[in-house]
Amino acid sequence: MASIVKGKEAKSIKSLLDIQSEVKVINRIALSVDCVIFGFDENKLKVLLIRSDLKKFQGKWSLLGDLVDPKEELDSAANRILKQRTGLDDVYLEQVRTFGCLERHPAGRVVTVAYYSLINIQHHKLKILDNELHWHDVNDIAELAFDHKRILDSSYEQLQRRVQEHPLAFSLLPKKFSMRELQNVYESILDTKMDRRNFRKKFFAMDFLVDIGQMEQDVPHRPGKLYHFNYSKYEKKKKKWVGIDF
Amino acid sequence: MASIVKGKEAKSIKSLLDIQSEVKVINRIALSVDCVIFGFDENKLKVLLIRSDLKKFQGKWSLLGDLVDPKEELDSAANRILKQRTGLDDVYLEQVRTFGCLERHPAGRVVTVAYYSLINIQHHKLKILDNELHWHDVNDIAELAFDHKRILDSSYEQLQRRVQEHPLAFSLLPKKFSMRELQNVYESILDTKMDRRNFRKKFFAMDFLVDIGQMEQDVPHRPGKLYHFNYSKYEKKKKKWVGIDF
DNA sequence: AAAATAATGTGTTTATTTTACACATTAATT
DNA sequence: AATTAATGTGTAAAATAAACACATTATTTT
Image (cartoon, rainbow over the protein chains, first blue to last red):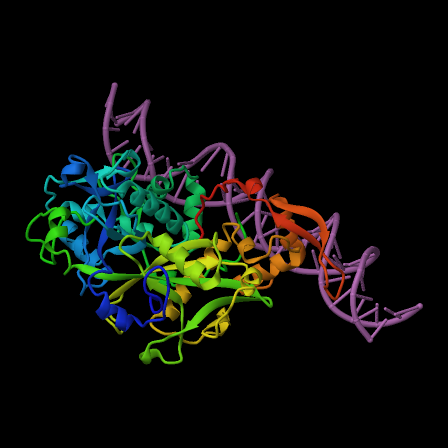
């Protein structure tokens, strides 16, 4: 990385040590982290948004973000934002990618690293939601401040890809959940309907769901069994992922 | 993104406009782009490396990178590096992710955005390779300067994932190629052997390979037909990518 | 208390996809 | 002319995914 050339013309080889001292200020850029915080409630995938405080974006909603401190890890910055806004620690968090368009921020050049996270909305609901914060249906968002709609779209696509290959969905549910709830998560993330019997068959086959011998409570119909996800049972039964499938 | 809180303690809400002017210098970070330039030659996947010029990494190889100019798009920076180093324009380029460990650069905080690119090594071979640059076997790299081994590993994994879902491999080959060459690319990227008949069947079925009515030249055996990849024929026959497969 | 409701729990059959596998052909080389 | 080394081609078996229906259970309604 960045060890070679200074400026666009690449006149001479110069070490970054030199560059650091020489162009210390000029070449630095404001860096932020933006978090796409997904939750699941009322059978819908939700995203936590805040009302933008910029005049230009008056009234528009935006993702939760902040500048990265020069002494701060990127992941730490993302965790800090989550902790601040949801009160939650130990949250599933994954970098999506970095957005660096020159025009993306009205205040000047701000490059932002996008993360998405999956939280159990029930846990979070207990915390204070000041009225600048709101859970929105992911599929009901037309526009956002800044380039946040693009960031949301990228993150959602990444979530859709990942959730089909890794057991992430459990992070959106309480520890105990029914098969119906699990299927609802998949159906809402992937925006599709699945066959109930085939769905159960598939999950019981990979055997990391543990029947905890309890039933749903307070449902207006026959209650289903409750399960929890045993990560250690999951432990990388690596699918032999070699195949071509455009 | 970055619209809300300043500093770790989130004392007060403050717009980034304020932040920009107030912490203009203090809160900015050096940003670089590093390119993992993949090529294919002698039936092996290669990566283009340069000898590090930092004392600390004397003799070690590193990726090709440079600082991002505050007025420069991230993609432009990556393209600039490619152009400088390989002489090539119009190259397949894709962002991998951003690496921001505090300790990753001896000169201080430098956050780097990783890209990988796929080039036709034959084209590039015509250009001057000064003796600081060298094509290395991807599977024969033990360590690199900085955190470049991690970046390479991430990029290689991303390439492996992508190449199974999108027709990227063609970027590593000349315009005209034989089925054997195409299969060699896949086998070396995925580090596996495939059945020749099934491989052909699969590619002829998706029908974007065009038989150009020419044969291989100068091969020491029966020459194979040459094909080229017709992107417009590929055009998103979206696989119905909904399924769960851990 | 009985009937109606709404969801759970469970296997089999069919279709599709993937894998395994062998021999005649062609051009170059010996 | 014989040998070599790869190309070109099809079918059968296995594995995976998709389609599909009915009895059961707790709750709610009558």
